[in-house]
Amino acid sequence: MKTINKIAFGEIESIPTLIKDFLNHDIEGFETQTFSLENFAKQIQLRQSSFTLERREILSETIKSQLSDLKLSSRQIENLENLKQKNTFTITTGHQLNLFSGPVFFVYKILQTIKTCCYLKQNFPDFNFVPIYWMASEDHDFAEINHFKTENNYYEINEKSGSAVGKIQINDTFFISEFEKEFKDSIFGTELILMLKEAYKTGHTLTKAIQTLVNRLFSDLGLLILDGDSKALKNQIKNVFKDELENFSLHKNSKEKVDFLSGKYGKVQVNPREINLFYLSETRDRIDFDGENYIVVDKNIKFSKEEILDELENFPEKFSPNALMRPVYQETVLPNLAYIGGNAEIMYWLELKDYFTQLNLPFPILIPRNSMLFLKEKTLGKINKLDLKIDDFFQNFTKITNEKILDNNEILNLLDEKESLLMKQFSELKNIAETTEQSFGNLVKAEETRQLKSFSRMKKRLLRAERIKQNELLERLENLFIDVHPAKTWQERIYNFSVFFADFGYSWIEFCLEEMVVHDSKLIIVAI
Image 1: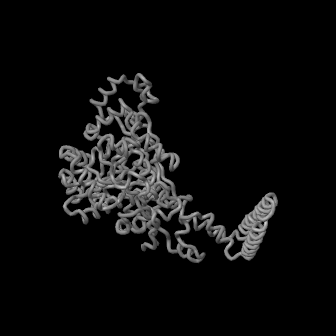
Image 2: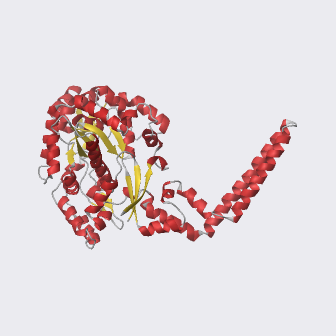
Image 3: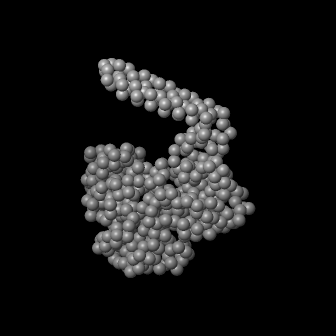
């Protein structure tokens, strides 16, 4: 494995403008939320004064209890103890409980979280930094997480769903036997199969499965795994949930920021609701207010104001934050300095800045995670042979393909030459036309437009003809694009980590960790 390029997000066409502007400090009010040692120093100061020792104790004991069935490394045990100390802070990432971790970027975001903690320890040696993976165990969209893909197969688990996915118990293990067939002859296939079997035992919940898998992959690196589905933790945010139920505060206090972001960048990632909470019973359902009572949508459950506040006071664990309220919950129960997430996550976090201010809750540094792409030497050789660069595959590839099809085309060169000559002739003619009556000048301009449109039509027809004539070259270009972008999207959003682990084992994880960039958001391209 060898890294051949690291492309900054600002140089990649498909990265959202909002993310580029955020990274370039072009959004007013977020200057202190970007990655810099100066901003981290400010966050440390803010968090030291806003997070109590009592909360630290609850956090440490909660994680310890949740992971009690797992074998923890010495670094994890040390991190659990450090969390009780006022000089310890967390760096957090979060993700759904995708089957066998889902797409490989799950691994990348965790590794970047771990490496960021190491970087901060080097620069702030008097403090401790603990990497946290926050499990989205309360999500209820099982169809989003019940599968993963490799280069050759699609794997899926079928279970009864509707409630918090973390509580779903595993009965269907057919996908394990199919996975075994694909990987039994791989170099590290036995390790992968054991990993899968250990995590997805019959009777395990999906929460338990992901805890087991993630701990096996990252325990030696000190990662701690936190499940927000916890009464002890939700006790700490009851006042925020109460305010949400009574005053719809998130919606009100994020409106100005949402209007600004949607006005400048188009539709926001997640629109706040009046009430940004779910109710957990045997299913997870949204809470709404009809003007008199609180309704659990799609359930025959309703509460008066007094009843729902009593329910919250006695059973806070039954109240579940939605995507926008979850960051508030996370930052309430963690001494957190920064959140590392995908572009879409960062975009909805940005909506919440004013709401955090209203809650007097420190808003974290936001770090768009690195991306990685692993390409075979053979693929890179084909790209070089066509005189292309890997960067080309992250620009407008249709435009690049058309340029390649018409490269050194004699007819196009002649058309360009004649078009330039025509423009020069009309320029001279327009200068003279200005000395006579205006209607003649208008006629000259109209005739120039008409003739230039003819050249544009000829170029389009030429491109169409050349695409047919050079069908073989076009097919090679399209196949290369699919090699770089399986299913026409970024590789990391399609393949599971097993695709790479099968050949390289834990050395692949070590390599990813080593190559990860913490101070900037980049696409890291690796030859294998």
